[in-house]
Amino acid sequence: MRFCIGILTIIFLTASSCFAFGTKSAEPQEFDNAGKGYVGTLPDLSKGFTTSEPKNTKPVYEKTKDFNSSDEIRPVPRENPAFVNIILKQDKTSPYLNDIENILPLLENILYCIENNYDVQIFNAKVYFLNKTVEYLMGKYDGKPESSYLSFKKLLELNTHTKSVATLRSEAEKYRPYLAYTGAGYLYNDNVINQQLDYLKVEIEETIVVLKDAN
Image (cartoon, rainbow, N blue to C red):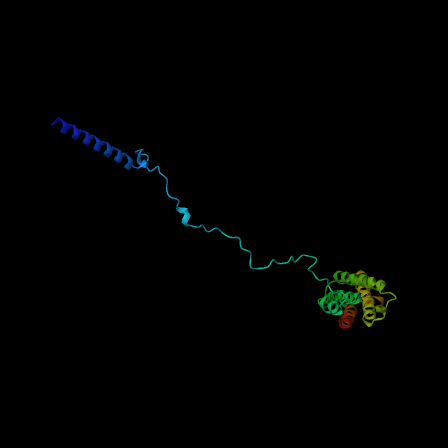
């Protein structure tokens, strides 16, 4: 009886040891530290995937040339008559015609004074400015072909006439109070002066036509 009990005890202890050993080996190592979460090794999931990285691409257009490059700019064909005469359009107006063009406003101002009965001071001031301009042109074109032009001769004649009328009006303002309307004083009465202004007006209009035709 004791022998049987001893055999059973040995078998029980042996089974308990095997169970304990099997249980210990079956516990995963990863869970030994309770409360710290999973501390094992995760599988490498990147092995089955490939990452897409941006690639450097070249532009589809060609690089434009530098516009300011001296090697790319063609020289102006100044020796080509077509370029000089058509593209550049040289100014064919002579200095004389430019001077005539500048004289026209002066004549028109004097004409406006006569038509609107401006006083002696304003009239004489405009005549004085015209005379100085004509004197300048006389010196500029003295001995040159322009001095023989009809427009130039007509301008000189008109300038002489305007100066004489301006002198007449100035003397009338100065001497008329002391002279009678007979004898020498007759030249300074209003009828004579107005008649001279009418003659001058017609001559100015004719000269303006001649100067415009010269252009």
